[in-house]
Length: 230
Image (cartoon, rainbow, N blue to C red; front, side, top):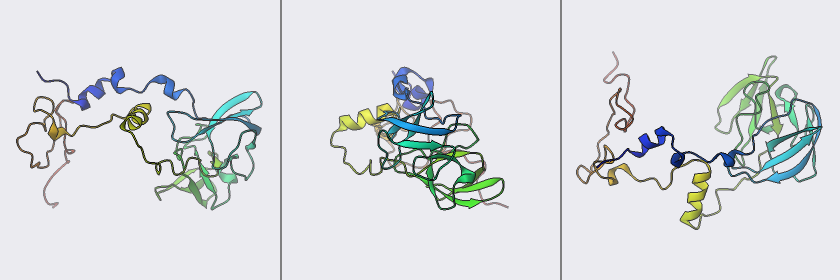
């Protein structure tokens, strides 16, 4: 008897295909106050690729990705400053400065450029918008009130160390809700996947029907139209 294909089982949302809640015990965010903060501790979070800094500002404690060279006991400025680790509005940061953990909207706590070793660059400064060159070389224009952290995120070179055991890769993927190892569809039985069975191994591109159910909607995305444009 057949079973649900992996794509359909993941969509069902059972605990087998969901990351455990304890992995996301630290939430990255910015404080609402301004002033000076102190780095209490550098933390390894299983849900994030970069180490996190536990920072205390006044009575508030928040978590932010650590920059390259950050140490415990260090002081950081919130709302002003030009040193690595300072949290500043985009309008206060000079053009050419490297930044990370950038807000898309004011006070959203930082949404983009948070992976280890990454950083963006302030490219342009206008009256109401600031241009930011992302690591993908795409330029976006954000509100001048959006905040970011100055510096480069720590953890660069994380992917350079070889993964000696399959078990380590399994745990790394599991911490981020990635299914591993991934079984090729053509190696499955015909009852387990539309691409399965030993027949027809010379695969042609398959386009799923537009209204196919999740168990059958596999293959290439259906184009809106085909043929030469007139």
